[in-house]
Length: 269
Image 1 (cartoon, rainbow, N blue to C red):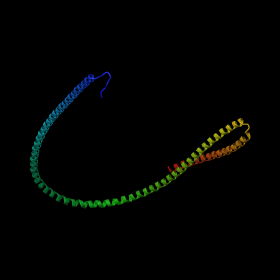
Image 2 (cartoon, rainbow, N blue to C red):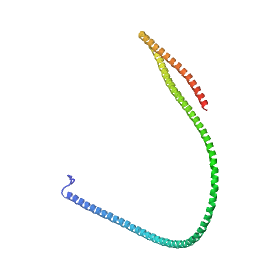
Image 3 (tube, one colour):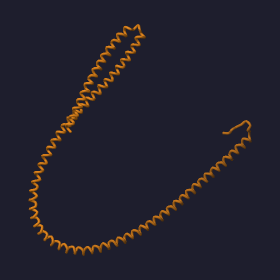
Image 4 (cartoon, rainbow, N blue to C red):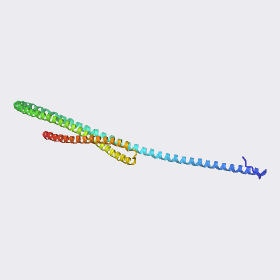
């Protein structure tokens, strides 16, 4: 689209269009040149990388040839050593065959000596039979001693059973004591709850007394309620006193049980 102005007419518009077309062709030519330069640079970079890669491959192949030659030399050395070892083994085998011959002669001599020793062993066995008879008599005496030892062990086992029975009784008594302690703790918690309730009742009483002063017109109704609350408080106090007495009695029972437990432990010890 053209930007048409009122001031432009005829030949002036044609001149402007020709200038814009020349500028566009120059810019396209420059872009093509730049793209060609970039392509050439990229091609050079790839050629350099290819040269480096080929050099590295040549070095790697040369190193592999060196390693293969070294391994070939090592294998030849190992083969030579193995041949020497085989020759050494053959020589040792010959020497051992000669030694075997000497050993056969020695074995024959030893067999003759063994036959002589068999005769001596027969005489020794006769003597050993006599010794065994003496040992049997001593075994009988040992069996008598062993029976006495077993009777002592049975007595010890009976004593252990008695001790285990006493321990079980003590454990039962301990469990009972623990149950009683838990019951006492529950009662203590109940007492604390009662005392808290009593404190709340006292606060309620004070509050009601203040209401009594503040509300003189409602004296009759408040007095009746006060009497009822006092009756409830008195009943609650009686219950608390009764609980405290039971607690004292149980503490005395606890003391007696502890004394009995100590006496039983002393007896067991």
